[in-house]
Amino acid sequence: MKLLEDRIRRDGKVCEGNILRVDSFLNHQIDPALMQALAEEFHRLYGDRKIDKVLTVEASGIAIAIMVALSFGVPLVFAKKAKSKNIDNENVYSADVVSFTHGTVNKVIISKEFLHAGENVLLIDDFLANGQAMLGLMDVVAQAGATVAGIGIMVEKSYQKGRALLEERGVRVESLARVASMDAETGIRFVGE
Ligand code: 5GP
Image (cartoon, rainbow, N blue to C red; front, side):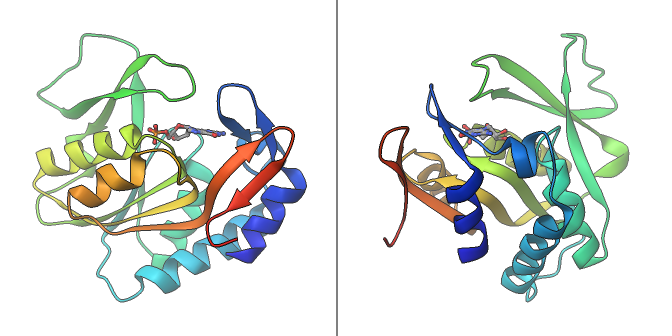
């Protein structure tokens, strides 16, 4: 999506550790008009599917996911990162997720109150790198007996293995910007350029 690619090129910062920082419009300051435009694009892409719920992981996925949920007229649920090892398995679904940005393993949890068997769930996140966050969400959706209707990603780093891992599991992945390569010196190149 050109709007997002242009914005990434203008305001994104390529940082050490293979991190693209988009603090000025998503990860610290948020541009609501941009989020709305991106959400409309996800709605166009997945408008043919029955979506009962949007699901993301706290915290950085919430901004885009709330706008997507609004465009579909459905609730947004965000998985929480649980610090405690004492998870109340009676009441929550949980999965282990290796954090790309911090290298730690977080347990993500979702209350059984907010995810039900038979629901069609659209997974949304800001970035796709190695696919661990989305695999964790797919795991909790399966535990609930719900179905993943598709995955919507703002920025995919296409040179990492995330998309392949998700598609191997038969799930549709739509990304609004696909980074083919990035480098602090030479800048960002998108797929198709
Ligand atoms: P994955 O689980 O696919 O390996 O990584 C995706 C998660 O890590 C996203 O939820 C996002 O928060 C974070 N992430 C991965 N790569 C980047 C990046 O280049 N920039 C930012 N800001 N976050 C990233």
